[in-house]
Amino acid sequence: MNISETIAPRSDQINAEDLLTGPRDIEIVDVRRGTTEQPVWIITKEFGPERPYKPSKTMRRVLVAAWGPDASIFPGRRIRIYRDPDIMFGREKVGGIRISHLSHIDERLELSLTVTRGRRQVFVIEPLAGEPTGISSDDAAAFRALIDAATSLDELKRIADELKAVNLGTHRRALMAAWEARRNELKNGHA
Image 1: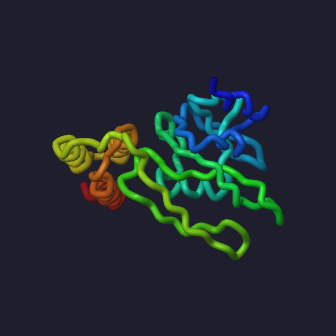
Image 2 (image 1 turned 45 degrees about the vertical axis):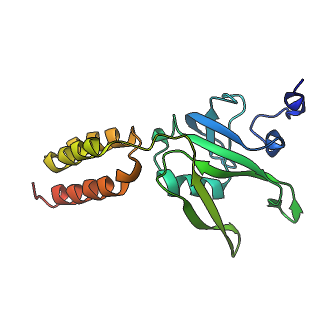
């Protein structure tokens, strides 16, 4: 008999105590606006809307650095969260939730982020194992051709939506750079 479910806290959110038995991989199904104190509520497949993940400001910075600020692309992506017993609230170690792995990143991220006033910490975020390696070189070439052939900013925006919907893998940087360059050309009137 596995008794781990019997120790789950009753709460309106995922808590560090939910992770006493180890890290959990969660899949995002929705991102909602929360309260002033906890402005982002991530609804997951595993915990449902009754117990959203409410990431701290530092973990929101991790998500923005890895995936960008547009939360509409987060559904379907996965996060590995873990309990960090050293997280402080005031002068007490209360523990909290950190992110260790993310899907849809090409390589390990090392981010130096502010954790308290005047103190920074390096956070290492690894690609989540078992994720698809990304689109093929042929698919990347097809996307590049679409970007190069775009004749309007609206058309380029539709291409960006398509790019956000797939795992670009190792082609991400090159395609994003090509997209940005084409956008600048169109903005400056160079078709």
